[in-house]
Length: 271
Image (tube, rainbow, N blue to C red; front, side):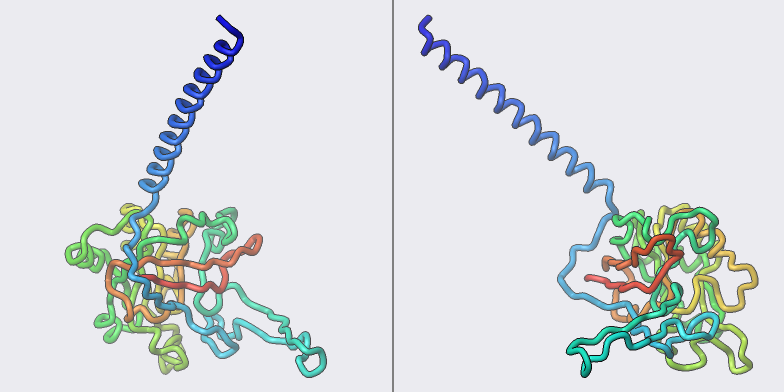
């Protein structure tokens, strides 16, 4: 056989093997991609409407301890320097914010260590406005979850289940935080409900009130059980009335500071 024939034969063999490996790699990549998709929670098919679930944070926004959650100090003055800059002092659990596992555990995940995939998830909204209108310390109970499931189907794995107690409308009034005789009073979740959500595989809970636990809680049972399990919570949500009970996708813009037990967050929903 001539040298030219040998060379051409080698070329054909190499090209054939290259095609084989390329096809195998493409099939493998496709399989991996399908696996990744199937491992993620089922997200809504969005129409493009974005609802901001975040309150504006300023010095007047209600906080658990009654102290301002954010303080401003002018660092650079525009008239003097042509640009402006604030020095901020921010307390982690202020405004619309995330509670990370580290908030109620010695060595749980910090807010910076939360899995980014879990910050984008299906949003399920449980409406307890009628109960909360009669009892400021009303709670989401297992029967509320049963009613939601009966009306809307199963709660997706990894979902954020949010309580809508109509409490966001009280921001800016003393009733968001206290009774007239200055006792804590606001709705939250019961431990029985969050234990059930943990069994169902929910990844987060959210409230439109000041705390995951109701205002009259003496033991922070939800904080002490839900967060150490590696899950997170969102407090002081806004605009839940603008969303359906199911079908929205939550985007939690969690802060990413080291050792963070939580922090103010930009929370968005897309439907």
